[in-house]
Amino acid sequence: MSTARTTDPVALLQDLIRIDTTNPPGDEGACAAYVTDLLEGDEEIDVRVIGVTPERANVVARFKGRGEAPPLLLHAHSDVVPVTGQDWLHPPFEGRLVDGEVWGRGAIDMKGGLSMMLSSLLRMRERGERPAGDVLLAVVADEENGSGVGARHLVQEHAELFDGVRYAIGEEAGADIELDGVRFHPIVVAEKRACWLRASLRGPGGHGSRMMPSDTPMRRLAGLLTALTGTRLPRHKGAAADRMLAELARRLPGPTGEAVRRLREDDTLDRPPAGLPGEQARYLDSVLRHTVNPTVVRTPDKINMMPESLSVDMDGRILPGDFTVADFESEVRALAGPDIGFELLLEGSRVDPARIREPEFGGFYDSMVEILEKADPGAVPLPMITPASTDNRLFAQLGIRCYGWLPMRLPAGSPHRGMLHQANERIPVDALRFGTDCLSTLLRDHR
Ligand SMILES: [Zn+2]
Image (cartoon, rainbow, N blue to C red; front, side):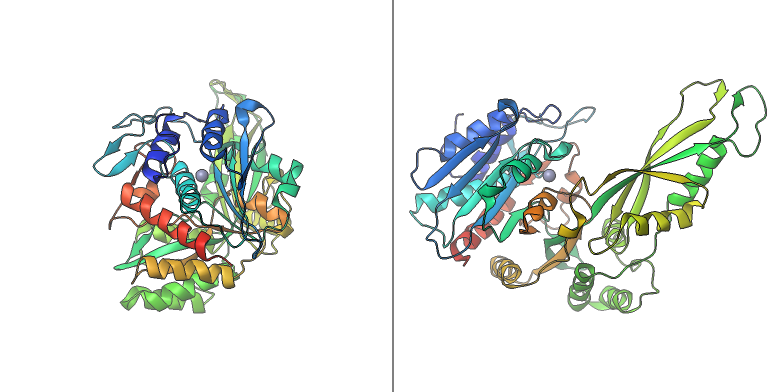
């Protein structure tokens, strides 16, 4: 690789983008080799390449610390989602630098974060510094397709590599959010878990040339979709969302802050304040409750025949805390009607829900807050819940407290948050440097 052994996050990101790790099939082996090449040949770094196959390799590197603190884990996935059918202004796998931004698939999700981690570690090594405790860097495959040969494999088959780790940093968080003139830097403290359901709808079928009775599966499908789209499951109160609302209410000026305060205090208020922009309002809405979205409808695919059965797959997401699948199903049933049978397709991506705990707001959280406040005076660190799933849920299975923290400071009004998995994914050079500096401070000061 041309710029191997650089410590610059921009050059690192350009190199990483040029290694096509579209998943499927993944092919993260080349990326693992690149990372290994950067880190190898140093007595203070123990580098291991672990994979179910060489093509799907993971890297776990351990930077030796002074033995004065427990090991800290940084983890990043090396795979990216496909670009199929997307219309890009610049090629997605060339890592072009255009007007102060690095373009390409993975720039945000999450080769940008990986390059911040690599750069902060390489710079520490360059300065001859040692962190208080060992720092582990796990570069994992397959996050975008279930993590089976990536983080899940490491956690299930190589758990001893992570012995003693108390805290971990991974995706997502990232880009700051601008609301009412206040810039917030998210720190993800909790995740929802997936609960995917299948509803089967049955009823009379028949030849498509005839008038149909009123209880055909298609008619029932219309009812189900109407009941579950554009509607809300009941609101729940949890520690992470409450702390987030408290912080928003305290920091947002004027009527929006007042409206968030009312939302926090009055459990009967069901929806986010009208003053919030659509994207932020939908986000808030999604972390106050479980959600369910019908996403796949399966029919026999025959135009002249009314099917006797069809199925609807639904992407459900359960809040962190003590909620069970049965709790969730009964809420969905209350909207969809009592006579629909559900089959559980997947829960929490096969992890132990008891390990997906409410967040910890202690010393480690506070140190991230302090770093952000110094790095961007006037901006506000904000604890957040992510409605999506990341590899944090898997490393949490080892009893590690996981946070999503890849800080980026972006120009006001920047569209970067919406670029995940979309065309024209890119990241400003300044945002990369900002995140690298924050992580460097964490590695230096972590006790
Ligand atoms: Zn990601």
